[in-house]
Length: 310
Image (cartoon, rainbow, N blue to C red; front, side):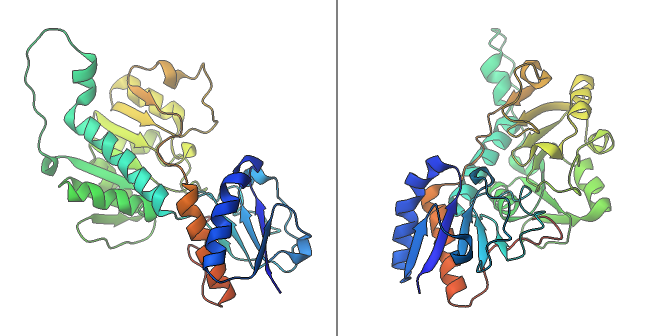
């Protein structure tokens, strides 16, 4: 009997993913049917994105797993009708893209590039930055993306501290965890990068209290999730000089409203959710590998802990 795979994502993606998934499943040696329509009780796997419209998994009585095309799973992790394994997207193409974006903006702050690009006043005032060994960078979140960014920055000799909710051990990175560790990590951070998931425990992790823990003038980079930051608290910290600059790629509501204060603030850089994107070529490889593993009775990769929400 063929393996039935339902593609439930934005319709425009079907023409992109269909040949890639067909190629990958064929190379895996599977007898399969891949489609955008299938009787629910015949579906073995769902390739899923929230914008595909699928909300009720109760009719999917044969379902073995839901395989997300998105790294963030906050829109499905709490779905009570979903009782089978849920795998999030951990895509090496997405990871590389995120690492490049984070390293680029950390270097931008470290080297003071904005000042040299925007201020051309005819005044010769050499003010070289310290070497990377003298610059303290904090990564909030040490999952796949956070660890990759931390390792890349450490390879450039930045003094990198990573913080996570639970204990981690990454060679070359000072790893802290828990509430006490968060205060220690922030108190040393000249540049903070947010790469945490969006969960009730991480919402507004940067707020009035935690922003006050930063050294005055620290810079913030958020390519993670919009709700990680209390926007009012950040604007107040920017206005007071407690935070020197913020580069924000993600927001609570997207697109960011044209009248949002971030657009006009002189110490905010807005980028339109471009830090990284799932690459169909590499994402399809991840999906096909998980289907192959499922059919061989092996554990799925990148399973979501529903109790934690990621």
